[in-house]
Image (cartoon, rainbow, N blue to C red; front, top):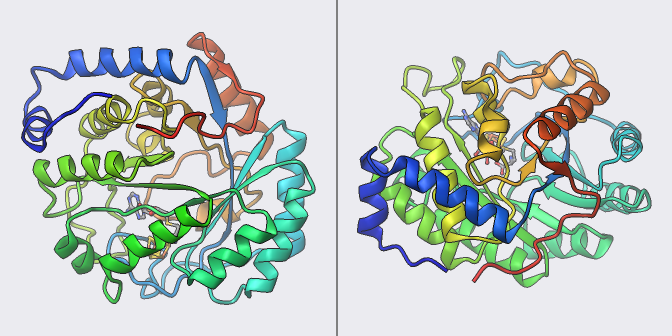
Length: 333
Ligand code: SAH
Ligand code: SF4
């Protein structure tokens, strides 16, 4: 494992002269430690209703312009069935923090989706120990909860009513319950410095994160941060590459937000340390309403189109789609 100090990471994030060396090293470590296979996770965006009010996010409760939707249990299971038919081995069930889904409902959905021989990742926000335990016992394998930023003051300013300590506590509960507990954050938040991003990276390493999702912050026009600049493609790519260097065995997605900033962003991500892609398997008009940020790609495509498009892109760079569930083989050390 490579040891980088906070000062070293800050310096490479601030300067450009080592970028090529970092990118080459990240790609080499990716090939040596997690190989050429790319894990596909089909994401089902099952509700865009949210009780939280994160300043950066288009789903925040004060965004009255957004058309809200909730998928039924049957719709979610039908979309997971389609994902399984398309060859996915994992589905990610993601939503805003929507209290309309009872724990019994979530557990029933998890149980039904498990019967389809799929691994399940939940990404439904902050819950209690008892809730996380119930979902785990129902069969959920992984949980995605980004720390967003490890700067407590910034986190609490951007996520009004939420506490940084509770976010950390949720992550440690998830890990203790035996989930593959994924985290991550945004690059280019207002007020975020290179040093702060360096600390994010060291946090992922200390937490031994089996998955880390990193993407640019993209300002949404219907949020209080609409006039902010947002993260750049290059800086996000650099943070991804550094995450690969610090966490050689982690599952690192080439995020959809990267693709939003550059037409071939996910493939570029795969060549700069990433080994996971999360194509959308949500059907119909719901895709366009799950608007965390503007300019989301593939909103008019079907799950079948997304699956074959991604498969083609992966083959075009000499990589292959993995056929297993894609659990993290070695907890990063
Ligand atoms: N409600 C859950 C899951 C859905 S949000 C949660 O918050 O954990 C999923 C992720 O979208 C968030 O973790 C955040 O990092 C990202 N996101 C939200 N708004 C964004 C924006 N404007 N630009 C880029 N990413 C954003
Ligand atoms: Fe809700 Fe998640 Fe968006 Fe925050 S980031 S407003 S919790 S959907």
